[in-house]
Image (cartoon, rainbow, N blue to C red; front, side, top):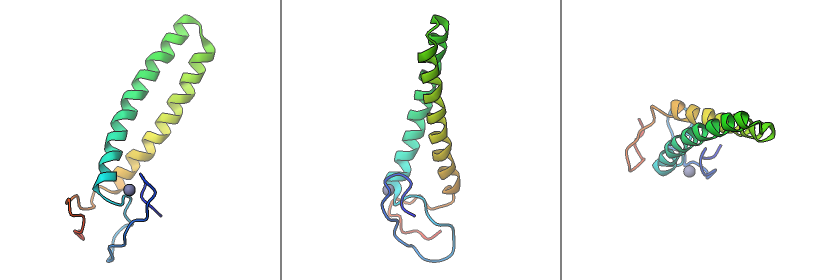
Length: 98
Ligand SMILES: [Zn+2]
């Protein structure tokens, strides 16, 4: 399986341990950033959705609700990769085997 973020093959580091989720620190960090962006986006769309409902724009409210579901699914996926990857080394040279 490739990197969760960019899909690139992850270099084998050998030894025991779980397979890595990211090809390197750049992708790991960019996922952290994406989680923050998704959080902000979900908050905004939720606000939009309630505004649409207040205005009686049910079609738009439904569309917003669908987007929220999609964003939350993606967010859950990303958060899960962070949890799994928490005990992998974060050294910038990336060759630590711990
Ligand atoms: Zn990557």
